[in-house]
Image (tube, rainbow, N blue to C red; front, side, top):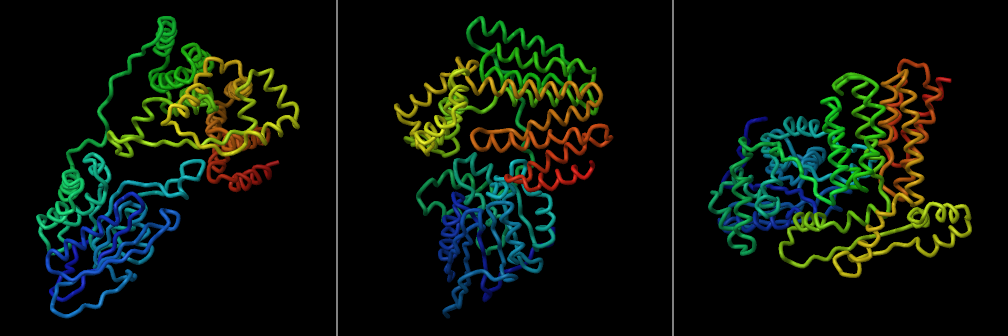
Length: 508
């Protein structure tokens, strides 16, 4: 971190830019800064250059201020590269973008930024982990700015029931970059008259800086107590006892898989999960910490659970009607006791309709393309369902209630057949090459979601495992299968996977 830069003189114009996306209160923060300068008898001007959320960058709010010398100052309307004294970024990647645009310079700029992330659209659309490496941004900011004040300012704002603009305003006050005392900053917030106490709490958290004594990790939570009908509890307790016989390094993830599969269907389904996992736990005594057989068992525990808890129409409707979801949305939106309107967007296709039917009936329909096309024309259109209304909630609740008949549906039969074939391949491979079998199991990561997303993932899954014959006998077979999976996760269309497959094809 470079030394602070002195930016205030009696005649110099102070130039300040704020980068924020929708919902972060960039306009409110700018108004506070303007009101602060005017309350001190300064001349000030502010402008805003709108962005399109994080598709093309944040909105840039620009403020120029100077002491009132009795003469009309000349202020610019937008920031210029290399000519910004204070840069405030409400999100870590926006701070990085400010550096790229030349707004942050080592000879003068004080950079105030929150280190939390609000993922951009380009990061979200990547099928795998599309997050940008924050460490690279950190290194660039330390080199680019004269002074860096950076910590997670979103967390204290949320804890105070406010927005990040208040914490950023506090960090600005604590930085000393403006020649005004903290009381003047607080008076501006009080003058606003709305959410004053919450804003002041967040302001003071920003002014004081990061709490070094705060624990980054949450306190361990006590194990949840299972409740339900006696017959279900008996099966559940039996399943838990089975897991206690697993290797120590396998127990935690197997227990999480059991919870997931039981929640998806019932306790007997959890037993099915453990039955499928059992052959992989018997392949060795490894504990999952570097041992090939141990890694195989841990990977199996994770991906078998994910595969068995697939996303179908029943699952989606069930999750959308759970009380915990409504509570979470209220907390995130900060609605309190106010009435909340919640609209779900549904776009079913003929495939989803047939998948919820009894297996024989659904297969009979799917075997008749003309009938499938007719059904698709009737139902394949976007629908908006108000799940906060009695009618909309009841519709979703009834669909979610079909889970008791899920085992008899066409979709379940297809999924179970696919899972059995996948696990049979992994078990056979594990006899001679546990590392390759582990990668076969991990390839299931490509399949997720439902509808078109599920279809694309399944296609990539089939293409990746389709090259196994070309990799047989190679010492680096597991490594190449991992590379293919990672390539498939790089983009939605599979262009990176196409290139990787061509490389593998050259082996033969």
